[in-house]
Image (cartoon, rainbow, N blue to C red; front, top):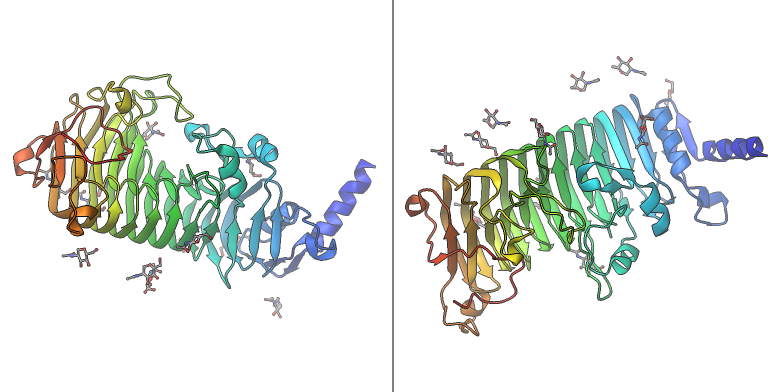
Length: 439
Ligand SMILES: *[C@@H]1O[C@H](CO)[C@@H](O)[C@H](O)[C@H]1NC(C)=O
Ligand SMILES: *[C@@H]1O[C@H](CO)[C@@H](O)[C@H](O)[C@H]1NC(C)=O
Ligand SMILES: *[C@@H]1O[C@H](CO)[C@@H](O)[C@H](O)[C@H]1NC(C)=O
Ligand SMILES: *[C@@H]1O[C@H](CO)[C@@H](O)[C@H](O)[C@H]1NC(C)=O
Ligand SMILES: *[C@@H]1O[C@H](CO)[C@@H](O)[C@H](O)[C@H]1NC(C)=O
Ligand SMILES: *[C@@H]1O[C@H](CO)[C@@H](O)[C@H](O)[C@H]1NC(C)=O
Ligand SMILES: *[C@@H]1O[C@H](CO)[C@@H](O)[C@H](O)[C@H]1NC(C)=O
Ligand SMILES: *[C@@H]1O[C@H](CO)[C@@H](O)[C@H](O)[C@H]1NC(C)=O
Ligand SMILES: *[C@@H]1O[C@H](CO)[C@@H](O)[C@H](O)[C@H]1NC(C)=O
Ligand SMILES: *[C@@H]1O[C@H](CO)[C@@H](O)[C@H](O)[C@H]1NC(C)=O
Ligand SMILES: *[C@@H]1O[C@H](CO)[C@@H](O)[C@H](O)[C@H]1NC(C)=O
Ligand SMILES: *[C@@H]1O[C@H](CO)[C@@H](O)[C@H](O)[C@H]1NC(C)=O
């Protein structure tokens, strides 16, 4: 019986991979199953096995049902064309128990994609549909949730280009680049938008970790968490021409979570960025220096060391940014007023240049470096932000502070930094600002 089922599976899968020379064209099982959402993952694996080396894999212009995890591995000189829709199932218990672990924060992914000299192109309107609404609704604005899968993870890859990738309603983070080198994501579109009262928390557009030589260019990202986040050991990343709607903005971090694994984030530039209604902005966030067991973010940590160096944020146009510019070295303990001077992460050589537009409240910047590692060479050059109210000729309500606040602490050479510090940064300042600075 078992053997018989296996035979049918191979035959039926085979009929939906049309293989000619080194090109495999995929057709969905639903075409011969009266439209039933039969899982296409087995045929997809078969296509990658047949054409993943020196070949081309084409998802034809149809709807593919992805009901089980994808592990497309060891690709070499392979071009992938996504012309149809990849519709991920909403079987939440299945994904939570089968998504592949990606180590960082014990997160998981629905699709592990790796190879050398690989392209993944969205063509003819092809797209990835994470069906994320089911995830947003059941998560109820909760923290990181074990097994809630990253849409696609590029792992152990060298020379990988994705061009024209569209990810709609990502289940969790849309993309994650891990242990890779020379990965470019260009002409990239993400939209995670909830249609009910529950937010799209944790739908980061792009996160990188332990990766070098990275590019993100020409992207439009709509989501409810970091637009782009450079997590630990991200080096030589250029982010250029990105528009972020909603979201938490452009982030270095969070880093410093693991005492035994130092993080080095070096040579990172974000340029030509537009923010529309972002909660945060252009910022750097590290864990505190004392490990905490508090797992209110779905994960505990802190105590990690390392270096954040040579970071540039330039040409940002912000509209209604909640907290436009920030350094916090205690992002998960600041609200409880704990450990903000303990971080073991050194931050230096950071420039914000040509940052213009409007802030939601009367605050432009909060720079709080750890007293244990004050920050040298932090520079502002042409940072011009005005609260939305003041641009409308209205007062900042509920406060006597009618100018932009730039609050500072533990900045080495503050006077020559170009930061118009006019306030002492308090050590319990939360990244979620929800009103004007009152005093
Ligand atoms: C497959 O190879 C044959 C012989 O080289 C060639 O005639 C044919 O056009 C190729 N088909 C495709 C789809 O490239
Ligand atoms: C793939 O192409 C490379 C370079 O052209 C060649 O060396 C290698 O043998 C090919 N591998 C296979 C499995 O065809
Ligand atoms: C993915 O496939 C590769 C190659 O077959 C295998 O070595 C690896 O263990 C698989 N990964 C997971 C997480 O199953
Ligand atoms: C990948 O492409 C580069 C540049 O074309 C080439 O030098 C290298 O040999 C390729 N790698 C493999 C493993 O085929
Ligand atoms: C994102 O999707 C929502 C809901 O479908 C839509 O209202 C919004 O216009 C989309 N955003 C962009 C930038 O396309
Ligand atoms: C970005 O978009 C512009 C305008 O469409 C285009 O000229 C440029 O080539 C794109 N960049 C990349 C890396 O594709
Ligand atoms: C920036 O990227 C958008 C796509 O997000 C593209 O439409 C636009 O042409 C690009 N602009 C430039 C100057 O490359
Ligand atoms: C970052 O890289 C260093 C080696 O350069 C390594 O020791 C450390 O464990 C890495 N950190 C993380 C978080 O992987
Ligand atoms: C940073 O960039 C400089 C200049 O290109 C380079 O010499 C250095 O090796 C880079 N650092 C890292 C960690 O990649
Ligand atoms: C800083 O990083 C940029 C890339 O973001 C690089 O071009 C530059 O050379 C680096 N500067 C130093 C001093 O390493
Ligand atoms: C400053 O940023 C704005 C908006 O991003 C841009 O239009 C302008 O060209 C930039 N100016 C310089 C001097 O780079
Ligand atoms: C300060 O930072 C800027 C920009 O990151 C860099 O070019 C410069 O070399 C740094 N200066 C010192 C003294 O470290």
